[in-house]
Each structure stands twice: as structure tokens, then as C-alpha cells.
Length: 163
Image (cartoon, rainbow, N blue to C red; front, side):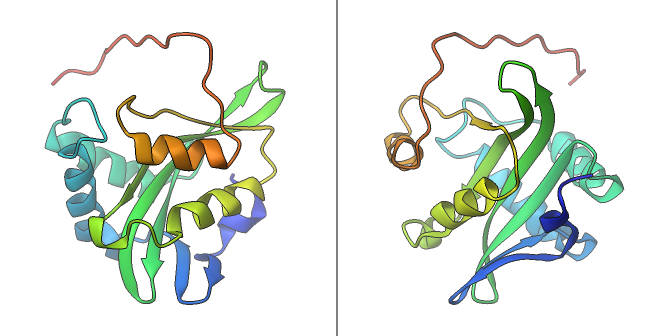
């Protein structure tokens, strides 16, 4: 299970902004924002629609490996973040991998991203890790200002999922 702060649906509230856990009622919202994210310059390529659906179903099944935070400006959903949990010997313990952060264009630059990362800093992880496209200078600037540093090695991946 994720640490106690993730046990509550309302994870973080500040002024009119809120971070909350995804619920089954967010299915259409999540699928729409997920597709927006995967058709944006922030990612190298889109993924099949079935991947979005499988991710939502996994989010509803368990929090063992992945959790989704819905980022809100007042009552309006502004974006989401997918966090994966793992153990890193190199990092010295529990590690959260920020798999995706997406804010709809109208909500960028309002501090929601910074608040998300402030919330994550309080989760008790030894390391928080993320990846970013090299040309996403706005995100890189934010991450750098929050203390994130580039890793000195290349990541590699092998795809075993059909589609």
C-alpha cells in the first residue's frame, strides 16, 4: 500500500487548488486527458487506446504498483499524475517514479505542478524519479528548480506487450 497520505481521497488542498485520488467516476475524464497527453509534444509517441483503458482498470484494481492523482483548480479537473512505486537499492529505499504528469493548457503555470511535487516530497520516499523529453524545456526548468538532476546514463526498454 502507498503511505497513509494516499489513503484519503483528498490528498492536498491549498487555496482553490486540490490534489485528489482518482475514482471510478473519473473514467471518462482520465481516458480523455490520457489521450490528450499521448497526443502532445511531451511524449515520443502515442500508445494504443487499449493501454489507456488497461491503466484505468489497474488503477481501480489496486494501489500496489500505481496510483493516479487528479489535479484540480477549484472544482475543475486540470490534469493528472501517475505515480509508480518501486524499491531502489541504488536510491536507498522506496522510490516513486513519476510516470506521467499532464496539465491541460489552460491550467499550466498556475502552480499545480509545484504543489504536486511538494506533496510527493512528503510521502517518505528515498527517491523520486521522473523522465522528460529533452525539448520540454518548461518541465525541465520546473524539475531543476525543485532539485531534480539528470542521471548520467541512458535508459533502455524492451517491449513485450502486443499491440
